[in-house]
Length: 188
Image 1 (cartoon, rainbow, N blue to C red):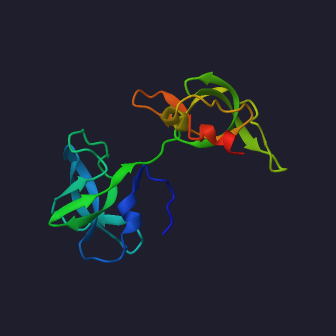
Image 2 (cartoon, one colour; image 1 turned 135 degrees about the vertical axis):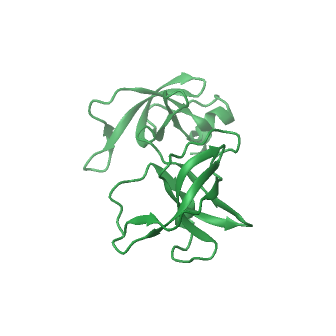
Image 3 (tube, rainbow, N blue to C red; image 1 turned 30 degrees about the vertical axis):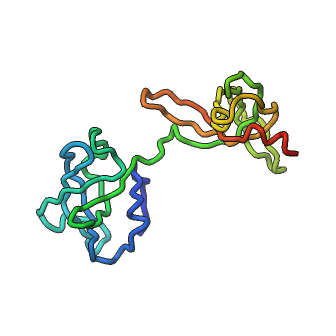
């Protein structure tokens, strides 16, 4: 079976489960959020042509372990998931997949800004296998997560290549972070 479109949610249990077994496992389509991390769902099955259709009109309650019980449900109706029967309860683990704003890229340290913050410049890999400034890329401000823990006594040297991840926060602002041991330069 090929997937034409990447689903907007990542179902970790689907990858862990032995697809094709029937004991304690059910492919379901979420139909509505009951509240918190509980969803109404209908059992679905595969048709001969590979599409899915409703297998029965028996509504199941599925607990999504990827969401806190006291938060509003975020998985949209119509999402297909694999649910496991755990001690009489149907559970799934469905979390939102990385969005376009959550990517990783190589970047070169341009200058330290203090307090674990740095100016970084996105890089691309040349045909020779070296890093070069990405065409048209603007300098970004990024935070070294390792330095937040270890302290800011050892600023990263300009020119160091790090893997920067962009993360969209709850307000929709994109922030850039990397995790590089700031004290590693003293170990050489």
